[in-house]
Image 1 (tube, rainbow, N blue to C red):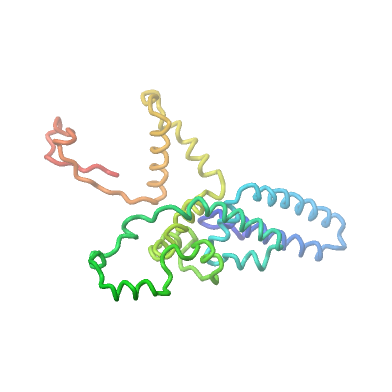
Image 2 (cartoon, rainbow, N blue to C red):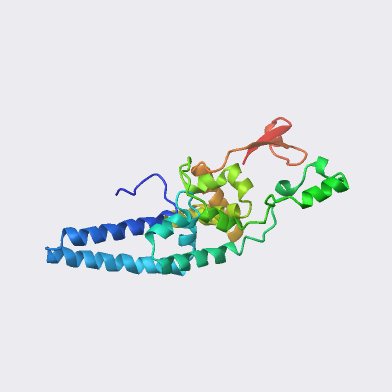
Length: 256
C-alpha cells in the first residue's frame, strides 16, 4: 500500500523487491516464536524469490535501476551481493552496446560556422595538444553509473532523462534511457489500450491495417493522458478540399 502513487516505472521493480526481502527478514526475527507466522513468512519469501529470479531473464530491470539518477551503481554496491552486481552490470552493458556506436543527431554534432574556416598552423598544433575530453572519449554508460548519485528534481527518472542537459551530456545513453524507462512497469495499461481497439475497429472500418490501428490507439492514449500537445494546423483548401459544401472559408484547422 505504501508504494501506491500516481505513477509507476520499471526502475521501481527491483528496489521494491529488495524492500520486501528486508521486511521478510525482519519479520523472521520478530515472529521467531510463532511457528505458524514463520512458516507463512518462508512461503512468502519463496514466492518473492521466484519472481526475483524471473527478472534475471530480462536485463531491462537491472538496467533501469542503474539508469536511475538517485541509484546508479552505488545502489548495487551497497545492497547486492558481488556476484549479483557483476551479472546485472554485464547485462546492462550488453544493452548499452546496441546504442554506444549510434550516430549523434546532426544538430548536436554540427560545429559553428566560425569553426569551419581554416585555422593557422600554430592554432592547429595547439588544439592537437589539448588534454580536454572529446565527445566519445569516455564511455557514457560507465561515466553515468560510476558518478555519485544525484537528487533529481523531477517526478520520475524518465522526466529527468528528457531534460535537455541530459541529452547534451549523454547523447547516446539518453536514447537508451528513454527506451528503457518508458517501458510500462505492468501490462495492465497496455492490455487496456488493446481492449479499446474493439471500439476503433467497427464494422465500417474493418479494412484498417494493423500498423494504422496501432498508431491510432497509441495516439488516442497519449492524448487522453496529456502526453502530447494538441496542435491546430492551418490547411489550405487547394491542398485538402474540405468544407466547400458548407461554404466555409479558405482555410481550416485540423487537430493533431
